Image 1 (spheres, helix red, strand yellow):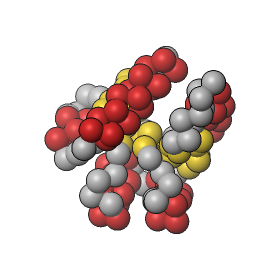
Image 2 (cartoon, helix red, strand yellow; image 1 turned 30 degrees about the vertical axis):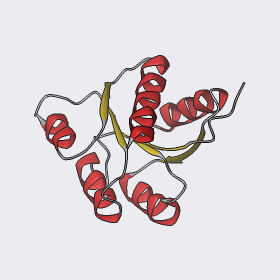
Image 3 (spheres, helix red, strand yellow; image 1 turned 120 degrees about the vertical axis):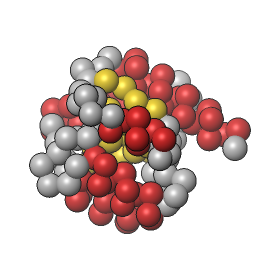
Image 4 (cartoon, one colour; image 1 turned 60 degrees about the horizontal axis):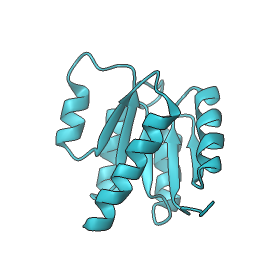
Length: 129
């Protein structure tokens, strides 16, 4: 299997989801970093933004919500690639984030295939730019 050598930052306050997704992505040839909170995600991105290709971002977290994280990441890097992964879609937040530059959305609970399909789509779009 050819290694994609792309690194994803997985941001989810549910450790089980983050660990499982990280292991599955590794099997697909991706590297991953994990943040269990919004503040941790911002710190990791600040320290490693040059090696992080895509951020998979949950919206509902206790210390800093996904919108706040997204805004902080965009401030550091206006071209940050963000895939929203959330079950909370009722209030129009996702549309606002997509309009502001997030590149995709998968609804929780999601299938692993949905994540990899969206990650691959985002990477393909990025190659063409």
